[in-house]
Amino acid sequence: MPAPAIRPVVTRADIKAFVELAYRINGDDPHWVAPLRDEVKATIDPKKNGWFSHAEAQLFLAERDGKVVGRISAHIDRLALEMPPEQGFGPGTGFWGLFEAEDAETAAAVIAQAEQWLKGKGMTRALGPVSLSIWEEPGLLVKGHDHSPTVLMGHHPARYQGWIEAAGYTPAKKLLTYDLDITQGFPPLVQRIIAAGEKNAKIRIRKVNKARFDEEAAIILAILNDAWADNWGFVPLTQPEIDDVGKKLKPLVFEDLIMIAELEGEPVAFMVTLPDFNEPLKPLKGKLLPFGWAKLLLWLRKPKARTMRVPLMGVVKRLQSSRMASQLAFMMIEYIRRSAVPNYGATRGEIGWVLDDNQGMIAIADTIESRINREYVIYRKSI
Image 1 (cartoon, one colour):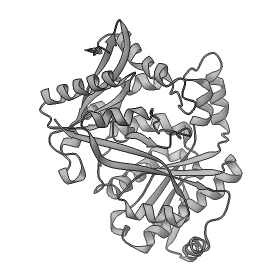
Image 2 (cartoon, rainbow, N blue to C red):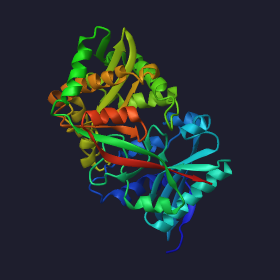
Image 3 (cartoon, rainbow, N blue to C red):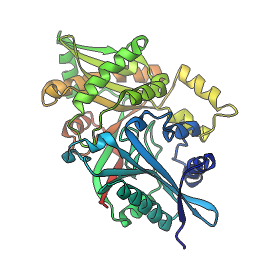
Image 4 (cartoon, rainbow, N blue to C red):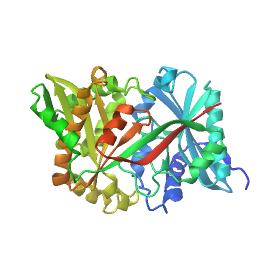
């Protein structure tokens, strides 16, 4: 099979072709959840994605015989370049993502094009797939193809793994998600830890107040940036990104599903839980018309979701090696569980992603008897 021609995305027609390719390649996968097209376009639009305030990207299309057969983004995050190398990024680190290909030859060609662009910008190593920010959809799905992803998680054809590895990439980091049954109470040990915390006058677990959304978001962000600062792949969230996330996720914010833990009146931990928006989204196949928008609005007014996802949680750094950290985590998980089951009809939870060397979170996941249900890999290569 001849190698495809690769060209940069320039026109509106190019952008449309770039977006539509994912629907054509993945449309027959019963577990793929088609994103809303306007959301995809906003992600790659520098005017609508705050990530571009500290990053640059170039999109590419692959064509063969006049047909689009592949796509990729090559991008550089200036904040990632400033991170310590021992945390995964640092000077010389570029990225690629938004990867789709119809065949192995196309996969090799678009990855090579992304590498060439990064090298031209002075980068010496490439990580991927990361689409586009580490806070958006990082990693390639390598385990868990037999079920649909939850909200804000990716889903990729199994064949992509072999194609990426054939291009000389090796795993840099594995990201895990954990599945658990939330219809049953947690093990007796966890229940005792929660009960002890409830008797501790210094601890307060509270719901967020949506009427003070910006203030609550600032509290969560402060804890997040402290708690995650030493993690592999950490890049601080900027205000433009926070504003974008706020607009996108505010409709999914329900006060009894997001908890802030206070110790002696000081916010020290948080847990964000989202009802799985992919459940009402999946049947729409990426289209809001003619009736999709009405169905989503109705669902958002009073959501019922089988699954609850915990995309983010954190405990301030000074408490992370203490028993208090796990106690606060167990209390927040339990309080959210008590709301999620009766109020939203939830039967399962999904925690993640979790770095595969995050021993604290893995210990918490193991203790509440959850199991790994999906694995993602971020690959690396010297270029």
